[in-house]
Image (cartoon, rainbow, N blue to C red; front, side):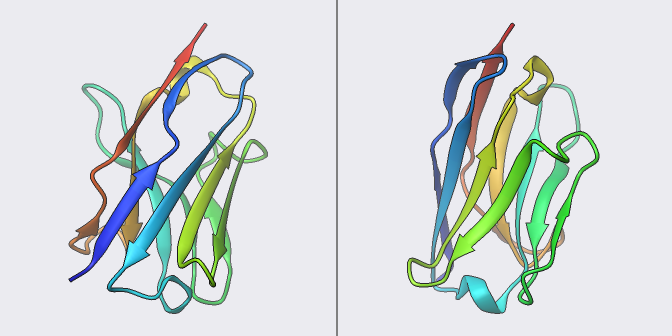
Length: 115
Protein backbone atom coordinates (compact mmCIF):
# COMPACT_ATOMS: atom_id res chain seq x y z
CA UNK A 1 0.00 0.00 0.00
CA UNK A 2 1.44 3.32 -1.10
CA UNK A 3 1.28 6.17 1.38
CA UNK A 4 2.60 9.70 0.95
CA UNK A 5 2.67 11.86 4.07
CA UNK A 6 3.27 15.58 3.64
CA UNK A 7 4.32 18.00 6.34
CA UNK A 8 5.86 21.43 6.66
CA UNK A 9 3.07 23.70 5.56
CA UNK A 10 1.98 26.73 7.51
CA UNK A 11 1.48 30.48 7.56
CA UNK A 12 4.38 32.66 6.45
CA UNK A 13 4.83 36.28 5.44
CA UNK A 14 5.68 37.21 1.88
CA UNK A 15 9.39 36.80 1.29
CA UNK A 16 9.65 33.99 3.78
CA UNK A 17 10.56 30.34 3.35
CA UNK A 18 9.09 26.93 4.05
CA UNK A 19 10.28 23.39 3.42
CA UNK A 20 7.73 20.72 2.66
CA UNK A 21 8.50 17.06 3.25
CA UNK A 22 6.88 13.98 1.76
CA UNK A 23 7.68 10.68 3.43
CA UNK A 24 6.84 7.76 1.18
CA UNK A 25 6.02 4.18 2.12
CA UNK A 26 5.14 1.30 -0.17
CA UNK A 27 7.06 2.94 -3.00
CA UNK A 28 10.73 3.75 -3.55
CA UNK A 29 11.12 7.40 -4.45
CA UNK A 30 14.39 7.02 -6.34
CA UNK A 31 12.75 4.61 -8.79
CA UNK A 32 9.80 6.87 -9.53
CA UNK A 33 8.96 10.32 -10.77
CA UNK A 34 7.96 12.28 -7.71
CA UNK A 35 6.27 15.63 -7.74
CA UNK A 36 4.67 18.46 -5.87
CA UNK A 37 1.38 19.88 -7.05
CA UNK A 38 -0.77 22.63 -5.62
CA UNK A 39 -4.38 23.68 -5.73
CA UNK A 40 -5.64 27.11 -4.80
CA UNK A 41 -9.33 27.79 -4.08
CA UNK A 42 -11.34 27.89 -7.29
CA UNK A 43 -8.41 26.78 -9.41
CA UNK A 44 -7.29 23.52 -10.96
CA UNK A 45 -4.49 21.48 -9.46
CA UNK A 46 -1.20 22.42 -11.10
CA UNK A 47 2.26 20.94 -11.21
CA UNK A 48 4.84 22.84 -9.19
CA UNK A 49 7.96 20.68 -9.44
CA UNK A 50 8.93 17.14 -10.38
CA UNK A 51 12.02 14.98 -10.05
CA UNK A 52 12.51 11.93 -12.22
CA UNK A 53 14.17 8.65 -11.30
CA UNK A 54 17.27 10.01 -13.03
CA UNK A 55 17.20 13.12 -10.89
CA UNK A 56 16.03 15.44 -13.63
CA UNK A 57 14.02 18.29 -12.17
CA UNK A 58 11.33 20.42 -13.78
CA UNK A 59 9.56 23.48 -12.43
CA UNK A 60 6.55 25.59 -13.21
CA UNK A 61 7.61 28.94 -14.62
CA UNK A 62 6.00 30.71 -11.68
CA UNK A 63 8.36 29.07 -9.17
CA UNK A 64 11.61 28.80 -11.10
CA UNK A 65 14.49 30.27 -9.13
CA UNK A 66 12.50 30.22 -5.90
CA UNK A 67 11.57 26.56 -5.29
CA UNK A 68 13.83 23.52 -5.24
CA UNK A 69 12.72 19.89 -5.29
CA UNK A 70 15.06 17.24 -3.91
CA UNK A 71 14.99 13.75 -2.48
CA UNK A 72 16.77 11.79 0.22
CA UNK A 73 16.99 8.20 -0.93
CA UNK A 74 18.01 6.91 2.50
CA UNK A 75 14.94 8.49 4.10
CA UNK A 76 12.70 7.74 1.09
CA UNK A 77 11.58 11.36 1.32
CA UNK A 78 11.02 14.15 -1.18
CA UNK A 79 11.35 17.81 -0.26
CA UNK A 80 10.23 21.12 -1.65
CA UNK A 81 12.24 24.08 -0.48
CA UNK A 82 10.25 27.24 -1.07
CA UNK A 83 11.99 30.60 -0.82
CA UNK A 84 10.83 34.14 -1.44
CA UNK A 85 7.22 33.06 -1.06
CA UNK A 86 4.49 35.20 -2.57
CA UNK A 87 0.78 35.49 -1.70
CA UNK A 88 -0.03 33.77 -4.99
CA UNK A 89 1.78 30.67 -3.72
CA UNK A 90 -1.06 30.16 -1.24
CA UNK A 91 -2.56 26.72 -1.87
CA UNK A 92 -2.83 23.18 -0.65
CA UNK A 93 0.33 21.37 -1.70
CA UNK A 94 0.18 17.70 -2.60
CA UNK A 95 2.90 15.13 -2.97
CA UNK A 96 2.57 12.75 -5.92
CA UNK A 97 4.24 9.60 -7.10
CA UNK A 98 4.07 8.45 -10.69
CA UNK A 99 2.70 11.52 -12.37
CA UNK A 100 -0.54 13.47 -12.58
CA UNK A 101 -2.63 10.50 -13.76
CA UNK A 102 -1.46 8.17 -11.02
CA UNK A 103 -3.52 7.29 -7.98
CA UNK A 104 -0.74 8.05 -5.56
CA UNK A 105 -1.37 11.32 -3.78
CA UNK A 106 -0.81 12.58 -0.28
CA UNK A 107 -3.48 14.27 1.80
CA UNK A 108 -2.03 17.72 1.21
CA UNK A 109 -0.56 20.43 3.40
CA UNK A 110 -1.79 24.01 3.49
CA UNK A 111 0.60 26.83 2.65
CA UNK A 112 -0.63 30.34 3.31
CA UNK A 113 1.46 33.39 2.42
CA UNK A 114 0.35 36.71 3.85
CA UNK A 115 1.15 40.03 2.17
